[in-house]
Amino acid sequence: MKKIKGYNRIETIDDLKKQSQNDGMFEGFILLNLGCRSSKRISYHKDNDSWLLINEIDDSESNYDSTRDFIRNEDNIMKAIKVGSFYQYP
Image (cartoon, one colour):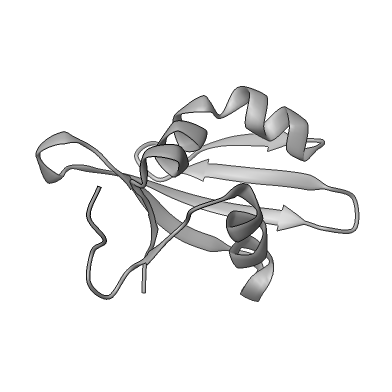
């Protein structure tokens, strides 16, 4: 997958952790087919290894008590990271 000029591509779960701690909330998207996007807001709390995920399309929220649970349940995000299609908004 090509990089998108002006956007930070998330390449590992550690990248996502780092970006999700800064200013409290990561804002990004999964780049889908035909240029569509699935926008996400993610917050990672290092002190207790917990995650909050908000899906922008419907404002649904998911909370995870550990990185392991986040990885296990958010396979679409993990697949997007693996193939290089998960980006942070500038």
